[in-house]
Image 1 (cartoon, rainbow, N blue to C red):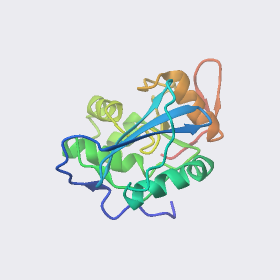
Image 2 (image 1 turned 60 degrees about the horizontal axis):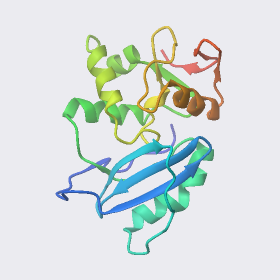
Image 3 (image 1 turned 135 degrees about the vertical axis):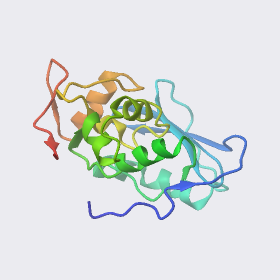
Image 4 (image 1 turned 90 degrees about the vertical axis):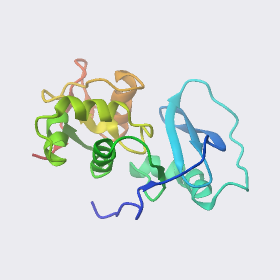
Length: 184
């Protein structure tokens, strides 16, 4: 990966709730984004589109996220946006690792567990991945079972398959990620 992660991937924030919300379109539907002045709280898929109104009072990083959204879908990722510090240290370590999985690549849950130094904690890894509040931005859809079966995804396995297909992977009728670049 030639791109680097944001210097402070996770940003400490004392806000009690998100201040800004926007719904952005993508090739697989609508994404609801919530943020405060300091960080991105969550980004999840929704079937209910909302008005896309840019507020010029938004912080510059949020305006940049909206401006680069379409390009990010073409490139397979958006980098450089502060994520609200949440979750346990292990969850943040796992989410940070997910950011290193390139577009068009997948890893197994076991490979992620090995990469974060917890080879016997595959269930904890799967739990952390399932609790990822930034879905596409922290690409948890790029993690598959050891048999390359598409396993759970907060938005459903069909959305996971659609996201992988956009990245050039062939997802067969048995929901298997085929011809994916898998690093050992």
